[in-house]
Length: 294
Image (cartoon, rainbow, N blue to C red; front, side, top):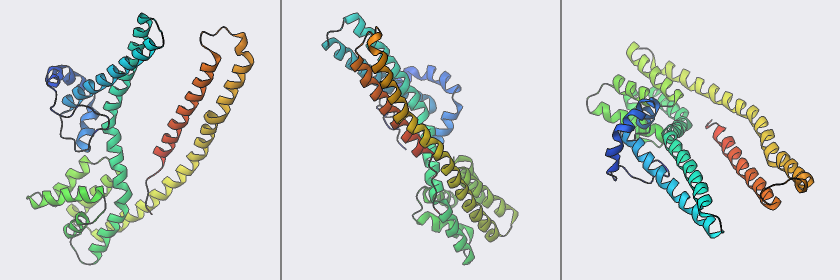
């Protein structure tokens, strides 16, 4: 999976090797980053990824520095003040992008888990149907790999390929369980592994997995409905109440305050901040929506 906004592709910059000593030290404080890169199948060392993140973030910071400095200079600003403001903005942008690149692997791993869980219950039902029809668990997994269950088919396909190379089915499934970020997928795979090793009835185990997944998804929908009521109130607060109060206070007491910038500029800043907060809240509400298929 590719990292969005990453400007520098792998092995394209010599300076990556120059930063490797520093990035190795930084990587020791970020153990979760290495795990996230493995989970998203990113074929890159964690210290090399940190180096590429530093370079890409530096490019964004430099671009914003030049843009802000050029705008302030064209608007008649003092050069020293324009440089100071542009440096501050550039540093903030650099820091934000660097942190964003460090967080993106875990975000993508979470998205991958959501894609897996979206089709997991149907894949389990398909496996149960194949086992009921007399197929072996390996044969059922082969059918899942050939089917269109999104990331579930992709991950099971990797298991099938490992089995074809001589790895035992239990070991291949165990490797998948240790790698995946989806808790439901992990629990399902471990249940299959334990059932295979214990020689228990696979049909009963699969039926129990499907029943638990159905109950879990209904619970997540109920919890999201309760959270949505609170999030709608928060959205209305920032979208309507706070901007209205701020503009009203600005109109009433603005003329009596000695403010360095014009009241019109403050008004537009309030509108801009309200708009940005609304976008953030909308994206947060979307991110909280459970990915279910019943």
